[in-house]
Length: 480
Image 1 (tube, rainbow, N blue to C red):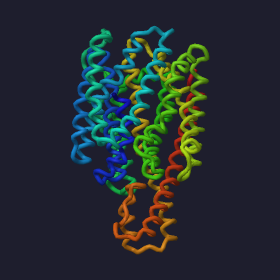
Image 2 (image 1 turned 180 degrees about the vertical axis):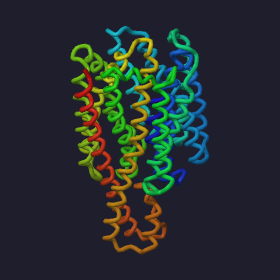
Image 3 (image 1 turned 90 degrees about the vertical axis):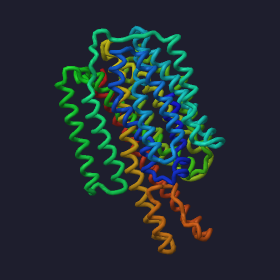
């Protein structure tokens, strides 16, 4: 449910933007509100599973996720959708860490790598199905159907959980939870992301942007200080004494910052610039998903045969090459000679990385801390994706605006058309044009907008390549 929903919503973003006449900042929040609460509360979700029962908390998460999905499908404004997506994030924080913790609890260390590899493969294939199903539903029914599909899935998942999944918990844990830590973490991440996203519209010098960024940094600093002294912290900082655990989470952060940002902007490019249908845009990622599916189990076994270090250096390096290949793309051309090669290379890089990375995290902690370790690593990956969309959004908007200014200066267009375009900049390639503009001018302006978006897209992918290389460097230095 969580992986299908996450990838299908990205394909729905252009339809949402058109239906609600929303800016790119609005659709960023459709993704970010979900990611924010998911990232901030994953640690609480992992702790709740360890203390109250992993299956119990997992099932509560599934039921609440379905209810929040119904709210998303019934949303009448973009703000209602953003709030409902936040509710999805809260429920996702209950179900996601539980799924991996149940796997980890059920297998010994000898078999855990391949078990997690199998888990990674199935999450990958469902993530791959999501955009295709979502694209088809958008074209045939509505973007709302993308959310309603979670309801029958929830019924099936709950039935399987009660019939086949054993209950497990850490009996040594007390029943108290670190809600103050969760509040500080949510406040800090929320303020930081809000400041970064709004900086694209208001600029970094605006008082609102400065104040929210300062609040975010202060709240996260207080959060870390509080966690270091709390009797029962949500984030046990002692786990980071393990060099492998720290290194794996640091490289997770950089790798998923790159992936989260790129997954957000590729569908916008495919649908709004390249002219792909929603279904075709979803299908564009199928090669990556198939590679993850077929290679994840093999990659999980690499930890036992070759140690984790070298797969974790090689994987992000290959992924960086995939991102770099995206920077050569323009407008037009066959999918097989444009998007297919970088998608395949990126898929190879992620396949080599994901299962060894997850296995390294789970093997670096005692078995009774599996839930919180899973929660931390999931939270780090989600925080990476959360900040990736915000930071790479700044990159694409600045590159887009700079390029568009240069291109419009060479066009002979009326001042009122120029002013209308300036008002539409925050919609990037989804910008509308004055309806009474003649066809020749419309074609010329549309071409410049699309070309400017491609320049911004290249800047995003080059930044993602750099982040992936930093991830590889972290593995080289820190993983034992």
